[in-house]
Image 1 (cartoon, rainbow, N blue to C red):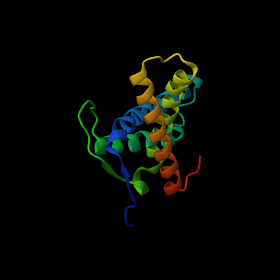
Image 2: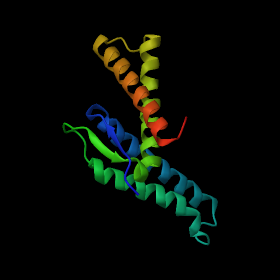
Image 3: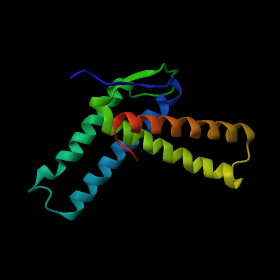
Length: 140
């Protein structure tokens, strides 16, 4: 099968990394909750889906790089291999920036520079997530 590549713009690579880390946290929370309900030692197969999600997130972090804080170039990602985590990570990033955008709209964020940056980031993420979902065949 030929890879289906999608280009993540350089300006969104850090948001992608943050979203992948959030996906790992979500997986950990599900596993923690499962261990608290009991029966988890007798049925380890209950963790197969979470283990697969964690491995997929780690594979994407291997591609992106685990550490942040540097300048990024655009990134080519194989959509067939990374679709689930990629979509989840960018949806999470879009939701996070939507919260910040609400602060702009309601006037809680008053710094003009930050307001402009948040508005631009929200627009860029919304546009990219819509394109990603269309290409991934995974409408919101």
